[in-house]
Length: 145
Image (tube, rainbow, N blue to C red; front, side, top):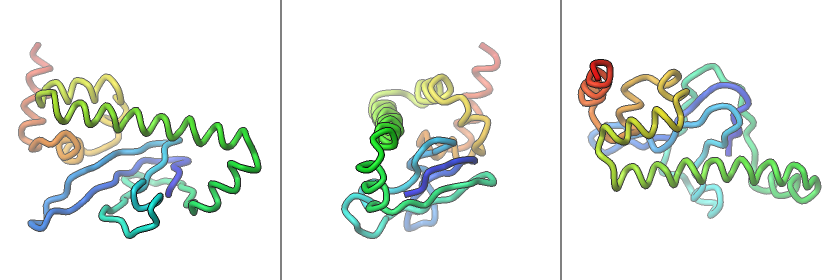
């Protein structure tokens, strides 16, 4: 698991046709990694890419557990960071299954405006499950509202 001290990154998968799709973004003070792989100690299906010059701490599962047990304040900090990630995941699932493309963009822009500044539009489109052209139309329409 990677803790981002400085910078930004994404977790993504690649379809058989070579198309990439973004699973999640992460910025400073966020964890970035495959929670399923991390907790079940299995190989990951996903790729991690830092999209900016970054400083990250790569932490093994056992190390996190040991430090959290030895230093309660660290355990609380880890819990808060995990909660931030869980909230982002919950928002993403809700958006993906119940909102239009325009609404998904609106939620992302209000919840995580820094993502729109720090990740390329092609990655934002992938994250939202739309084509870059659709994202461009959405952004253009918002300018003229």
